[in-house]
Length: 406
Image (cartoon, one colour):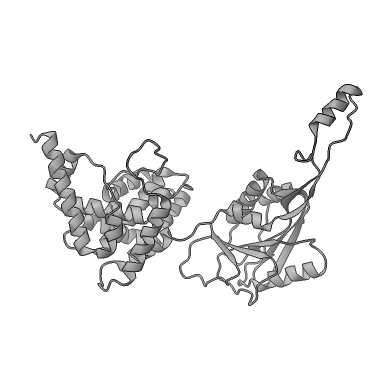
């Protein structure tokens, strides 16, 4: 039986050889290879290497792709098991699309058969797409175990603070720069037939900017006076002195106003061209209310218009109390189901502004799949298009629009 020190030495040489193999084969991975470290059990690695001569190089490439796809930096994930499985499927899908001599494993043919079945209902395979599928449709225990056997290669450490760790841990920003560099070098790499499109798709998704919905909603806030004690201007010393001296009669009354930046005038537009079902609309309205309510972003009295539109305005519900937004969500009735045209909503809102319906409208949110006709000119207020899915074929939004995917 091999001793521990000898096993460590041999395993280190196996990984070094795997790293050199990838470096020679794919020079656009140079920047990532120089930063990736693999923690491993030497005996287990050598055992796998003995059974599968390509195991080490495949493991190294698997870990590299996890890193440049930024999989461990996603902190908005609710189901960790689904996410880990989705990322493994995405990574192995890219590797199998590359079809690299010297990188194959005995399970690959079976994995390709499973991926071909997945592509019948999901032509594009990325971690986000697979995760959404698992989260919405679920997955049986048997299918989960089968996917694990075929696509799982490594542990999935989450990026956490390691204050006492002497080794330098690369930040998300570091890996974003490396991913962008790989993407740029990949575009100049001439070799065909190596799954470049699959790799490029996953890189594009991983480097796509994700916005803080809460922070964006704050762009729609305006300054105004809210009736409440303003602690910055209230002098408790004189107030308490009066209570003691004159038996519960304060010397001064508290200043019952405070100028704060909150949301009063607001428009929510909903695309009813069959692209946004009732469940999506309900969740969207609840989510918007929850974010604004928990962050105290609303004034007590508001002027919110919820407008439904396909190719024409179908309805306009006016809300004066923020709680109404949450209350109507469950009983919201969808109207329309025609073609999509965004222009009628903006024309209608312009009419409302002209008729003095708003004091100071700062923003409009449009829930849609994005497949519609956009206005040719920018409105006088901020506009956010919230897309209800990820769609590579969606027409580009105009330069003035804020875009978010949910």
